[in-house]
Image (cartoon, rainbow, N blue to C red; front, side, top):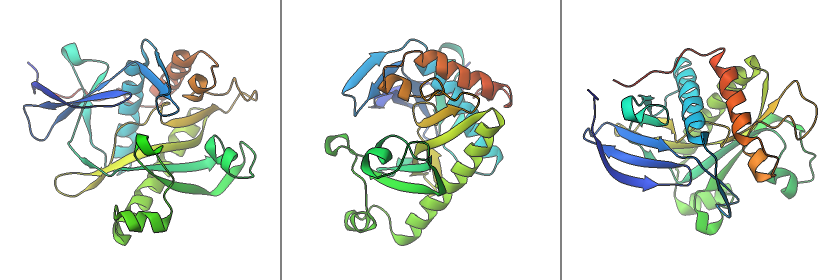
Length: 255
């Protein structure tokens, strides 16, 4: 018997559906097969993508937890919810995308005179206002203060947590022969006001390059394969999962 009953749909985003459960301390997240890019201007259905992202996120959330980094993750679903469902703590999401860049890529190379692949030391942290209608604009410190989204202490806590996540993920991916180019995360507050990592961590939200491949296109194992029409998106995600499974314990099933 399941430890929870699925409740009404709370929110549907580009890649996930979030459902209430009959427990106030538990939310169910369904990972979809939808692929989107450029603020959903480009869309496709990729069979198996949701399952892969759910499994990858579960492994990475558990690895973060093992390093003392708090997340909303509670475990994977079971029964009819096995595979592409995740159980999480409810959080109040901060409407900010936190991006950390270890190497130059993507929009950074279009906005600054810097070559793709250039190492960034220290890693660059950018904050973006999470609003598709506005195009998720970059937030300067002045704009952040004007919007009142974070006070000084909260801003410091967000950066500290994001950089801890970066250090942990770099270590994990290094062990499986992958370069963590950059990634975005969402953070939120639990009911007891703990700042935690939320949403997902997957090839949808990380740029990952195969360290053993020199070709600029072939080394890509992330959503850029979809953005750039390179093909092999699900296969690339599958390779990321297989590598992580080689160094991570089986993910927890929520009971």
